[in-house]
Length: 294
Image (cartoon, rainbow, N blue to C red; front, side, top):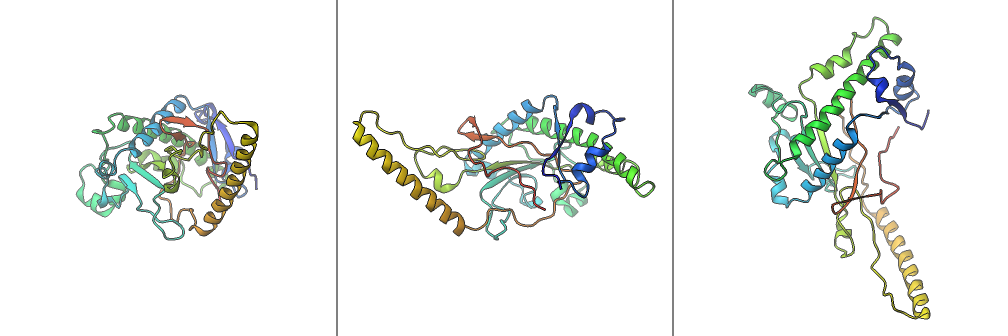
């Protein structure tokens, strides 16, 4: 099995006649990771930056304001959802919040009450925080629609590949048809809150997807001996802090999401953005990121 994700340039994905079978097999075949990336998508960096910053802004709203955009009737699968999912340990997952919406259609049920009642997680109308964040709806739709459009072209090449390896056994253009004709596309905007124990420390700062642990400033005017003594104290303190963190991680319940079944034919992802306050920062935790488990 290859450990390197397969990348396909956007220019090739958008060519219907291009033969991407070899790349698709390496990505999604028996020895693939089940994931591939598409590079060079026009407009994607700007749309990603705009929406993910708004995710941080929404998460910073007072809790009672965020709760106004919840939809219990959809089992929290439209609008804001926080603490409704469970970790692998069974504990509520309060570390992340999600904002769900259909990026292609505000009312996928088209007024069919029976459809909304039978499938509330898929056919309820969208909820937008227009009063608090007027730019949120457009940013969500623009990025979501771009991901759907690129994904639909990618499924065209997947359909060509399956037709080649299973001639006559797979309906021509089946996956592409599902994406083009489907009415219940689901967009999920994720925000990860900083750990509560770090928020209680005055030298810490809010972050949407991670935290940067900053040590308190040291006094500038000290003699050399005092500096050396203080540095030793800081080193000892850092070592003790690392040991305490390791012990705490071993005692805490697992942070992995609980076992679940995804509900899509194709999932499109964006790279995370890490924030400290209103400023984007480098990833503060080398262990964070997207994990693929076999």
